[in-house]
Image (cartoon, rainbow, N blue to C red; front, side):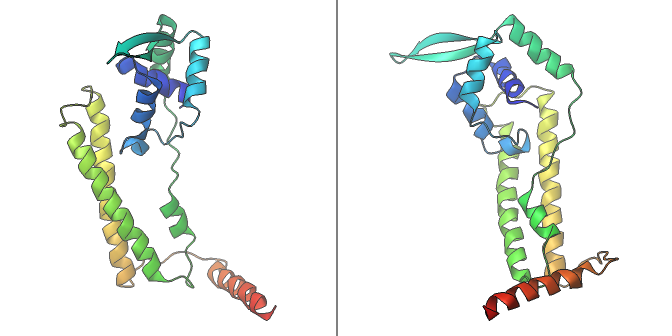
Length: 202
């Protein structure tokens, strides 16, 4: 999903300022949907305008002029062509999962548990936000869009269940047995300990 198509998608809701578009990508649950950096938002808007996909509209509000962006016919067509394309499978970028995948026996288990406890708090807050999202009387969510809200709810509920199971397994030494056909655990720990031993001897 390109930044340009994401911008066109937001503008399909209503004409928006650059600030409004940026805010849409930065609200509390945005990471569940977009997972993208929008630091280059304004250059992308300029590019879309130059290519005829959006047009600027000046509007006065409270005695001040502001620039809104609206889709052109070409912009609507590009947006709808994008809707018809099969979506790519999502790429997961989760620092907690990366850390857990590379955790080793010389690390304190209490540190990992603290990571999970912090994640649980964040996930609980996110679930409250998502549960309230469609009832806040402010946000626009289409009937089909409600299906994506339901996905977000189920995903967060599943994550909370997984976190609780993980904390229980770590606290009670009930981890499932992994697989290590080449003895990598011992080799990894030996390499680590040798590296620190060499550091101390300098």
